[in-house]
Length: 166
Image (cartoon, rainbow, N blue to C red; front, side):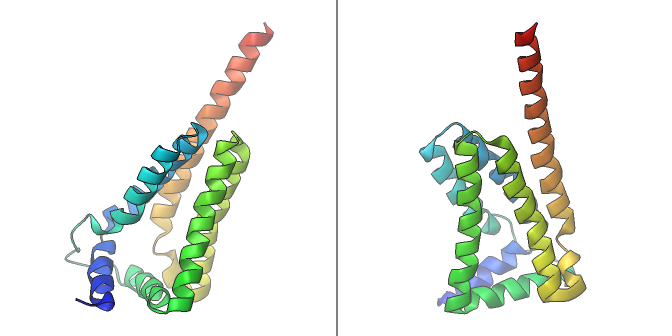
């Protein structure tokens, strides 16, 4: 079984929408562990997040637009240079988010996460045309969860500050 066989096996499973919806949840957990300054939690969650694309079975039917987006990703990962660049960009995003949350900068962390999630859609549109809109549902899901939790934390902090002033 060669590298391309493994890549084909992984991408067949990556086409399952459950693998797309689970990653924002892992992203939140990574940010939580960064905020708590837990290296162990960050590393374990990162490994779980990166392996989650193959947890679910290959779907019986595939959204043709999503197939185009994932074929583009597969092409990027099939070329050694573009694979290194693509993986580097993904890792940099996670590292920047972790640094922001490690420093307890909720605002900067949310900015990094939002810019990255929106940027993913923009780049998808640039490189795959209208097909780049295929993952917009999962991106909106991620944005709602991340920003909802962020707003809740801001609210709790403000409420705590307000109580201390009384």
